[in-house]
Every structure is written in structure tokens, then in C-alpha cells.
Amino acid sequence: MPSTPVSRIGCPHMDCPTHGQLGKGNIARHGFFKLKQGSRRRRFHCKVCGKTFSSTKDTPYYRLHCTRRDFDEVSAMSVEGINRSAIARIKALSWNTVARWLERAASAAREFNDRMTRGYELREIQADEIKTFLTNKDRTAWILTTLEVWSRLWPSTIVGARSYRNVKRVIADTSRRGRFEEFPLITTDGYYYYTLAIGRIFDRACVYGQVIKTRRNDRVVRVDRRLVIGSPRTLEDALVRSEDSETLNTSFIERMNLTLRQGSAYLCRRSACHARSKERLADHLELLRCFYNFIRPHRGLRFGNEVRTPAMQAGLVSRRLSFREVFTSVGGMLLYVLIIIDFRASDSRIQRESAAA
Image (cartoon, rainbow, N blue to C red; front, side, top):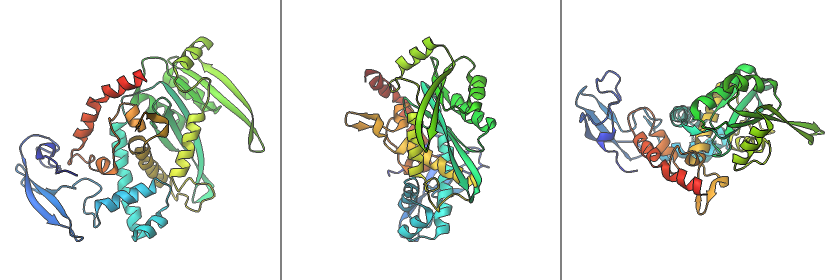
């Protein structure tokens, strides 16, 4: 990765008057220091507070005793469904080291998701839940997720009980971060609390329908579609505007549920690698959500030779990111986030191409 211009670096020390401010001329290069494996790290000096700091300050790479490539590879294997014990064996690391690294990666991914997953367009939303368990089958937990169908963006997720409070939280978070010019189409299963939460948050400013499946011997034998908010005319208009749906369905969120189960060792069926706590499961899902939205190309978003990520399709970035760019954009010191802001400045090109397609 090319060296960062000092104009894009702010002092990370909280007691400095120029903390986090860019372009003040107070940051100067201050040589290098060597790591145990022989590589070098750049140091910087703040002329205002007089303190020095490394190029990895306030990032997950800070005081890392291995290479950044190893850290990125551990994160990548984790979101591809490989459990921590297997990662430790593959990389010849201690299990505790892998666990500590993934905690750092999840914290950075959570901050990145919170900052970047904003301003997307809401056209068609699908919501669903996944049931799992913690420690043993007596402690169940639910993963509530939403999906923006047009861009395949995964906007929000909540881990906890299957309750009205959590349903309202996940729908409200999706609505608060997005924007809509026309009434969005919302589709869920027949869970009762969705009707209350969506009616409370959107009122009549949406078209909401439910897809209720009747199963017998683990097979779907009947599918009922019910319009809850809106009229048949507004539903028809919403389906005409939709690029992917000809009728009410939850097929896209159900396919994403499969992606979650394949990408998280905690959620694989008949697995001994279930999560021991709700917090650990929620952290891993934040890392997986960052990978799914910003790093992993989506095969359903192929335009000629270009395969976009959901964040590219939603106009949040203009190209596929990497874990290195995600991890070095957090903490407020190494401000590769300016590059990401430049991505957003060029999203008009993406919108024009999407409209032409």
C-alpha cells in the first residue's frame, strides 16, 4: 500500500488540541521502527503536542506481532465459514491469538458499518429471522436481518429474542439509515410483530405484504400472500417498479440467510462450533456484514465484465474494497476514509449506469 500523505493524517492523541484534524501542518514524518519479523512501520511526530505515534495507531493492526497480511487472512477465513480452531491450525497460531484478532476485526468492522452504511435508497425491503442457540439448545437466540433487494445491501441486523422490541429496532435502523422517494415495498413472513413495527415506523408511507408458508413434513405445501398496508393498486405499482420481483416473495432474504450460514461457522447446521455468547455472535455478524456489503462481489450484480458489491450498487462506494482499507479507515488517525469519501463523489457514474441498465 502506498505511503499516506501527512495531510491525510491527524494526531490520534485525545489531549492534543489538533486531535483528528487534517491539513493543519502539524504532522511530520519521524523515521521508522522495525518489527520482530523484520518489516518496518512509519512513525509520525505531532508538532503541537510533541508526541510521536506509529502509522497503525488506533487501527486493529496496532502493536500487532505478526504481519498485517496474516491479520487480514485470519479475518477472511473467518467470514468464509472456517472456525477459529481450524484457523489456528492453518496459520500456526494460538487459538487465543485468533480470538483476540477477530475481536479487533469485529470492532473495526462495526465502526466502519455504522459510518458507511448510510444514505442508500430504499426500494424493496425484505426481512426475516434465523434461529440458533448459544452454548446449548436450551439457550436460543434469533438473528433478525433486513435486505434491500435492488442493491442486495444488508443494512441492519439484531441478535436477541424474537420480540416486538427487536423487530422494531431492526426495521427502524434500516429506515433511519436509508432514504426513499417513493413508497418502498416491504415483505416479511407472517410474524405478528412485523405488522405492529412497520405500521408504527412507516405508517402509510409504504406497501407492506406478508408471505405465509404452510409446511408439512418439512416441505412447503401452501403459500399465502397477504397485503397488510396499501391497496392492490399501490402494490401493483410497487411490483412494476421492482426489478426483481413479480409478486410478493421473501426469496432474496432467504437466499441471504443461506449465505449467512455458509459464511459463519457459528450458524452451520449440525456444527459443534456454536457461539458461547450473544455478544460474540453479534461481533462476528458485523464482520460478516462488512465483508458481504463492501468486499465480496455479488454474482447477482453482474453488469458485463463487472461484478459489483452491494455497496457499489447502492452508491456507497465506487469499487470493491479490501480488509486492509476497511481496517485502516477506522480510529480517526490513518484517514483512508478520505479515499472512501472520494468513492462517494463518483457514485453518479454508478447511478447513470444502473439507470441505463
